[in-house]
Every structure is written in C-alpha cells, then in structure tokens.
Image (cartoon, rainbow, N blue to C red; front, side, top):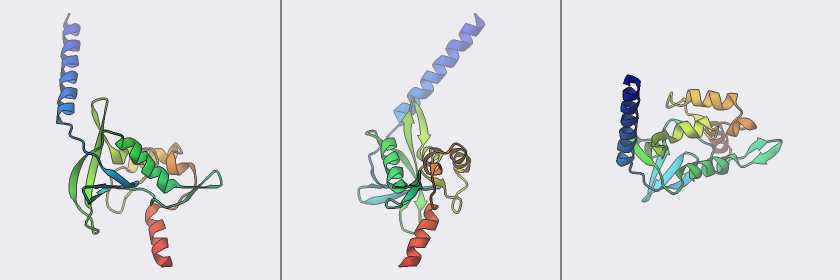
Amino acid sequence: MKIKYIFYTLLTFLILTMSTQALDWKPQNYTITDGDTLKRNGIRYRLEGMDAPEINQICTLNNQDWECGLAAALYLEQLHGVDGFECEDLGQDRYKRILARCYILEDGNRMDIGSLMVGEGYALAYRRYSKDYIDEEELAKENNKGLWRGKFMKPWEWRRARSNKK
C-alpha cells in the first residue's frame, strides 16, 4: 500500500512538473541563417557556446565534397520545425548579434539546441568563448557523428583561412 502511494505521488509530481513546463513554454519562429545563427524581425541571434560550419563551407565525406555547412543549417532547421525555439538573451557579441541559448520542447522537456547540435556532430564546442558542450563534442567525435564522419576544417580556422585569402 505504501509503495502504491509513493508511486502515485511521484507520478502526480511528474505530470504537474511537465504541465508547468509546457505552460511556461513560449517559442517563437526564427529564420535559420546558418548552423549557429538565427534571425527574427531583422535581429540576428548567435547561438552561444558552439560554432557550426559556415553555410558555404565544404567538407569531405567518403572522399567526396560534402556541403557540411548546409547540412548543419538544415539540421538546425529540422530542430526548429514548425514550433520554433524559445531563446534567452545572454548579451551581445562583437558583431552586435544577440548571444542566445535556445531550446525546443520535446516530451515535456526543454532541450538545449547547442547541446543537440554539438552532440549530433553538426557544430563544435566553441572553447575560445565557452566551456559548454565539450562533453557533447567528445561523444560525437567518439561516435563519428555529423562532421566527425569525414574530414573538415574547424569553422574558426576555415573563416581565418578565407579572410587571409582576401
């Protein structure tokens, strides 16, 4: 009898917690610019703590060119879906973009977009600015996910190489 009571109490608590999260959930729709940048009402948002390949960045997969930047943007678009993201403003970067941490709601749980992007290998932990997502990156690398399936230049190295050519 006591076990039954504890079970029903925990079940009630979980349902109330999930319901509260769902009630507090206020996603908005964004335009996906690339794998780590969003736009809404003319304002650009940079996902904090991660760096995805640039939209026109090419990587190598199975000895063939692979549009890894486009793949990262498409994965972010897939996460966005029709429901959008709920984002929190964390300040601005040097390009005047809003630094943001964004979430989706999945099965009543808020899921961090950065964690998902890095965990699936479509972005890297941006160690220069954050210690977030390092574990997710190491796991993606270990499991050959996303970028780690092929050969790629880290996004910040790719940008530097392109700016030096100009």
